[in-house]
Image (cartoon, rainbow, N blue to C red; front, side, top):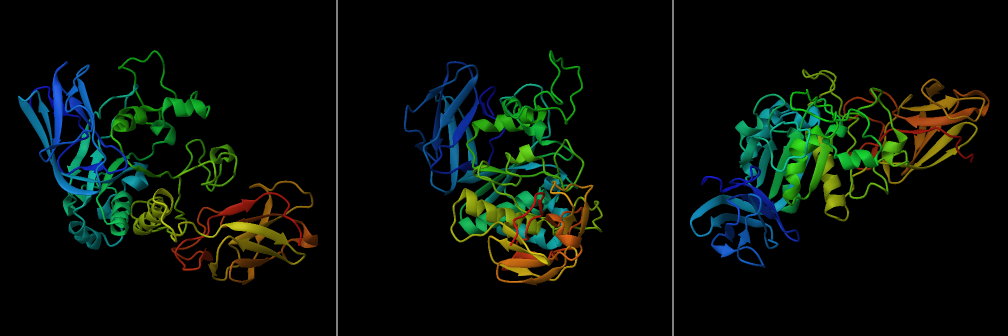
Length: 446
């Protein structure tokens, strides 16, 4: 590092830069009005002028689109006098992993941790980076700190202390992607236990969602004021905003619950873009992994921190392959009800795909009501045992509701819906569970 001439803190040896068709961005600091030229293993990397000028202490270069591969050396030269170099640089896809403590849950804590750590050395083209946990009341240009600089993964780095580094879900997600895509994957983590999504959201997004009046930063703000990690946008400002200059692929995140409600299960209707389920048509390029069947009641870290992160990561990778990469033939969602018909003695639930079903007496429940009003948590919900099933349908009994007073139907709508990998309804291959649902209106009769 030569005086004030340096790369921004995000960059480092062993990093992954975003591959074509995107143009990866390289930037750093230098003396005003000086010229900087960037070379890739000896050759220029821009289509435009061979040099860029430093303005307000910052220089910035958009590289030509690079196909996946490497390694390369990237050298920035300051007016032919000083140079700085990044070595062992790969081009591939870069993913940002964010969330709460279940994303921070380290690889050394998962089931079969010793086996997982022994596999790490087999994936040298999956590179890892972790931003330091910082807060800011204004949007920062550069990261305030780095917890793990860009690195080739090792067992030591992936087992770097409980809930520190490195994220098991992020690592295994990247590993699955690499096995499917066969080119470099860069993983950037920024996760903090117990933080709400509002703290990770920009002020513009919160204003758009009309959430900017809750937990907002007091104005005028002085550095002596205490900033809670619950405060709106403080983590966006310090951790996410600095990453916007670096071209990356997309984001995978885990959030346990909505910050404004402690109830579970709970769906905030407007939070789902008024569809009542997620992801949906207004949530473009979004995927979600259902993990309700991966509970770990005996987890030494509390049942809220299940140790099976392997299946979570695999299910997320299916979503990435299907949605982000458009890979055909990859199923990433469990069965979703497409039609519900009520008879005097049973209800037929038709799913949008073939199902694998096991018997259950109470995973389905019906709401009994003499009036056609929406059911809620205070309504009388009684078991609706599974009677039989077909390729893509399940039939449940309505015998517990007298006089055909069925006013609602729900599935797996409870704090602990089923034991480990033992939910009654899965995809035909038994891999993806059907998500919970509740129908709080009078179904059509058969």
